[in-house]
Length: 343
Image (cartoon, rainbow, N blue to C red; front, top):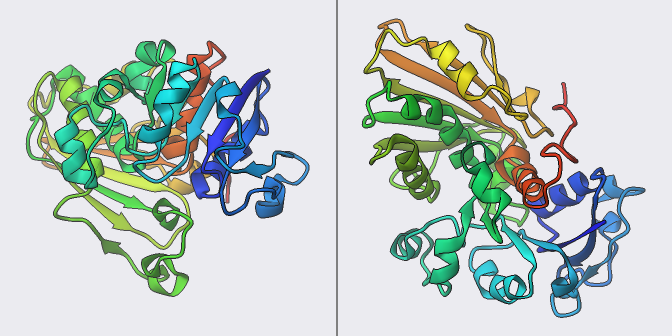
């Protein structure tokens, strides 16, 4: 049995990791950290885990993380870069759900996250954790940087088009809407029910942190710089991301449906819908699927891609578990086989 540790297990992504590992056939969470909740069983804090999880919270110093085979960091930015090096040195594989290792450029990290990066060597070594674009590298990685939720939905919607060279690499628009759980579990005025219910608003229009990783990774797919205007919106739902992506076709004759179906053929968590259909966020709620649909606008020169994921699963903990499975040469869908929840 593979021994797993989770640093920062009281937030939504930590709780989601516990839920997913409860059904994993070959791994078990043996270490779970929280300074505030030390000594408390996880199923006391998260009632849905009753009968499925008996791990107890402990402080990071008491958790014996170095005795784990893999450690997940579900922590604020800045924590993983301080703790991960010692674990990696002892042979522990690390999957970081924060942004500490997503950006290859330390100056870009400082610009977007307001802190100096203390581990530039590991920053260079870390593998960006979208299996559909970095599967081979993830298999051999010591350190995986789990992507942001918006970044995942936008990239998966654009990669087939950029790799095939059928769109203009500039002037792309990504309009992405997210549920409130993306803001985290801590109390914030902007996340309170009375502030978000019956309302829709854009935020971070002049620059969202996920923009930097979107630019970095799409440039790899395109073989050069890509210009994307990315605007996130907050919606009155708990889970889900819906990204609507617009790009100008340079090859209007391209069979877009066939392009997407071929690019994602055999991918266990990508579902390309039949032509003319529209994915719904509720269809992926609780599941690790990315459901896509590709449309051609009435002008015949614009492609519109619809990309939906659960921000806490494929957008965070589920994708992290998908990477974990690859790193330990396990079936990629281990612990992730449940479909989304309806209604």
